[in-house]
Image (cartoon, rainbow, N blue to C red):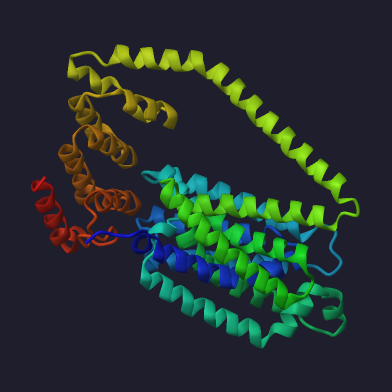
Length: 437
């Protein structure tokens, strides 16, 4: 059975729709409260919880990781509600920024003690929305619906505290208590979102639709409609671009969100200007300046990289002698990503690559397997299958499985979150298909 773009991207698209629905609303509260980075801070705190769980051997996207993340988020919610003072000398945003920096730093310290920590940090930042499961989407829809109902019931209290906290104090409301309830509900959403979308995409889903809609109108229901519409359009286009360009889905959607916000802001600037021709000329001049600067950096980068590339290529060629035993001296773990990509693109000896494959970590094993696949399809598939059988990192196994699906046009039923026993039948089917080649 051949998989269409819809089969591959549909789960990610529906997850984006659910994220847009709740995050666009919460983002409006965040902007009104002038605590722009509270979502980023809570997302990082939730990620810290997942990271601490990972140190204990609890893999991301599991129930244990979710509860670790949720408990850390509740702690963060308590800190943020307590830090709000009516007559504050230090802006609450400073406390929030400090919380983010501390959470990020502790996460790095914790993950430094765990194997393959760099890959885990990358996964937390960018998420794995392309591999989201329908069960996860269903759970998200249920959780976000309850949060939405809760906010609808107490919409007057939340709206008043977000828009006019002084009036809330005058009416005798317990602002800290309602703040705590807001951040708790907010934290529940963030905890679930970070697990699939990652810190960066969660932040953008919260902030960008809110900013764009508030630039256009001051009416709440119109802001929600604009935010939701923008989210749907960006999700469709961003995921499509990631598919045809073979790009990471989360960062692609984030980048397209940023581009859309810039386009909207420029259009509104020109449309609302008293002298539109003059405004248009300023925008054109600004874009021209940016292009010149980008081109300048491009030339500068090429100038300084030429000598480095020549040195790298010659050094690698010197190390790659006909004696295969010398390959064990090639330490690909010390190479930068660009150096490794250059090395793999130049290397054509499959035996060399097989030797290095045995010495590499899981993330680089996938890169090496992909290169071998270009040189010899059957041997490359054999390496991908070994990753499915022996890999410890679910997201790397998922990458290998997705590569096999792409090559075969078939889904053999392999699940990266299952153990070897449950996946045995799927792997047997993959091996049987490979043997027909």
